[in-house]
Amino acid sequence: MKTINIGLMGFGTVGTGVVRLLSEHAALLAHRVGTSLRLRRIADRDIESPRPVEVDPKILTTDPQQIIEDPSVDIVVELLGGITPTRELCLEALHRRKHLVTANKALLATHGLELFEAASKSRVDLGFEASVCGGIPIIRALREGLVANRITSIVGIVNGTCNYILTKMTQEGRSFQEILQEAQREGYAEADPSLDVDGIDSAHKLQILASIAYRSYVDLRSIYIEGIRAVDPSDIQYAKELGYRVKLLAIAKEVGGELEVRVHPALIPEDHLLASVGGVFNAVLIEGNAAGSLIFYGRGAGQMPTASAVVSDIVEIAQNIVHQRPSRPPHLPEITTVEVSLKEMDRLRTGYYLRVMAIDKPGVLSKVSGILGEHHISIASVIQKGRREQRTVPVVMMTHEAQEGDMRKALAEIDRLDMVTGRTVCLRVEGSHT
Ligand code: NDP
Ligand code: HSE
Image 1 (cartoon, rainbow, N blue to C red):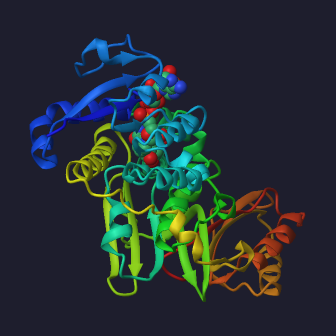
Image 2: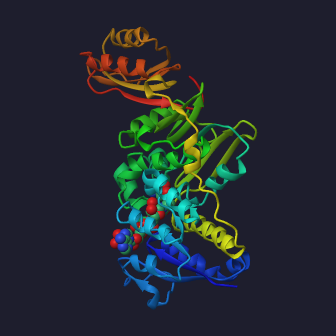
Image 3: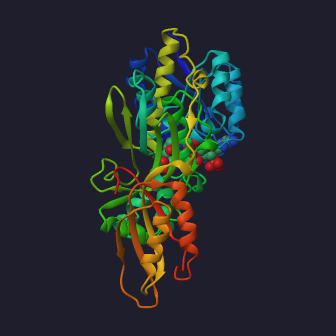
């Protein structure tokens, strides 16, 4: 039986994990595939620094193009990250009829259609299990295990770095910046960590999940995105006192025939299934009309969990080669036939947490609640944090379900009041209605 040759582009955090698995589990993987998997070439800018795994120096190169051009390479594994020159390298690999495995959600969310079309045209496989939720086999679950369902909602914690930061802020009250640096040292964060903290990485993953679940290519630009930079430790603390946790959620929900796709921090009740998901862990709650509620939980980032998902794709593709099975039908282009109308954010209905920074004097509350009332927003509870006559105090409010557009108009008016001294913090509440 022919050995399957693998060309690895990117010998960084995840690439190193993949090399480790391919070498440490070589016999097991050969048994599962039916032939051996051989690392034919590895490309990385840095081929001098020692790695915690031994490789034959002769297979190392600084030029990824050499992998693409090597006729003996059957499967190209892209773990370079970024868009340029990664997109061009991947497209060329597919045009040269090489199977492709990638963990690059940024690339898939922005150029997925083009890549899937190229794979389809060349009749090769494109595996991307590692692109969402690291070690959790969520793509296979949605694409295969839940194929018989109409998916009504996906609510997930899909960014390990943000969850790590929010968990540490909740438990230890340390600063955002200090915790982010820790997440970077652990290899969880993207090379550009603003992708994590500004919610963009979560949106990339949501784009992939929603496109599979709703069989319609969801344009990344239609996803509402808010990150966690503005989440203040005091809001995490107040939320905790009220029985909530703050999480960065990626949400795709079908409501009245329309699809909501959004990423933002949200308060969830402390007894919600996602509330106890801490640290770098990810979890996704999926509602299917036949299967009911399912929760997928595991390590969403880091070297070995992500490598586990990458190697699962390599093995599946290698098995296809060994058994001469045709490549799997492309997953994304076929779905463009289904039309889904997306709901505008202004029409979203949810509960809200508000922190109004107001001068502590009589009449303030009635002014604020009057404005909310005029915009059809009903208050569920109010707490004034502390007493500082004629000075600014935080007034924390929870509202019943209201419409986002009304809330925006009300906040604009509230923030114009003389007695309000700073911009009102507004966080959505998910998982129960106040
Ligand atoms: P790293 O930055 O650790 O590794 C990427 C490696 O590729 C680096 O050594 C980089 O070198 C090298 N590289 C990048 N571009 C080139 C190029 N043009 N030519 C040669 N070498 C190049 O990233 P990760 O391993 O963390 O991530 C890889 C991919 O996996 C990304 O798409 C990421 O989003 C995804 N991913 C990562 C997860 C994680 O937990 N880390 C989890 C899930 C997905 P240099 O450093 O010099 O740029
Ligand atoms: N930076 C990403 C995260 C890596 O923190 O979740 C996994 O996709």
